[in-house]
Length: 369
Image 1 (cartoon, helix red, strand yellow):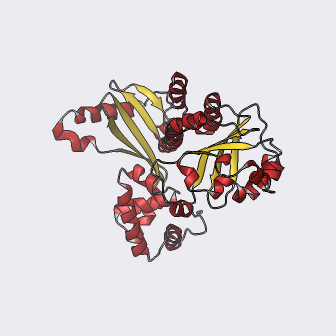
Image 2 (cartoon, rainbow, N blue to C red; image 1 turned 120 degrees about the vertical axis):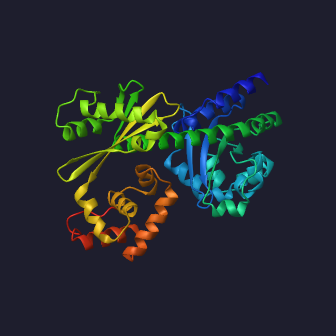
Image 3 (cartoon, rainbow, N blue to C red; image 1 turned 90 degrees about the vertical axis):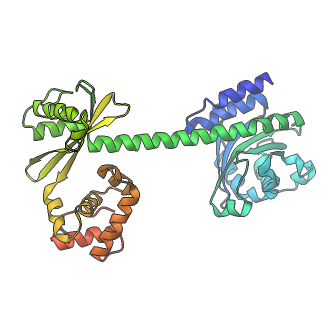
């Protein structure tokens, strides 16, 4: 029991999804040894299988991979789904050794070359899974473990250990998937912030971090070379003034106004934001193409609809536009409906094409899908 508890603790330290299979196999193999432990993912409808192995095993040959996929329908575990999804099962639960040997495909072409006479399977499914029919319709992947032995000597103790471990394997795998999604979201957010341009200031107005693009904009719009990680005098004075406004309730409206600086046909818009719990400030920079933005006004759209269309033409999706304009994604969708109606179109591509056509710019700007 102590060994099982230690293994469970180890499972919850596995955060990287790309190495989850290998690390989880090591944990499972220490509890229930086998000649060939495999972490597998099987597409329910197509029955295509992808496998992960421990580092000391080179993997299946192309012939074995082909046989595993080609004859998966002959496998006793597959033939007894969805029963086998609900616990830990072995091939010997369903067929005798003689019956298994008569299966020319799955045994003769796959299990026999691996010197395997029995396998024990467990799948990582929600304790309350979808019905089998809905699982097929959902284009789901079944993730789990297969343990191979050259003799039929898996014990009931082995089954009990894996049944106890199974819900923790499921939760650990789910955590790894969520961790990966969180990392992807963070990376996307960071890319958006870098593109938008963000400067982080402490409460004394000192720069703590600055996106690379901001340095370029500062030199372009303020006309003076700026030291790395330092704001120009004009911008620093504006920040101090806005911070003082934020300290007085009567001046909150004034504090929310952005700083706008024009250069040629472009405009730099700078906003000051207090980041909770109030121990630092954010300067958010965005650059606009004044020529295009001003030109869009002749289309008869509202100011906000014009901004939505503008950012849509820059290739941003609804979520990015919402972040750009500090509005809810649902509000962006509503503005898009109004834009489609006013331009008499049905899609983003058509809206962009229609706008560019009316502006006489269709041949000079690329369309963003």
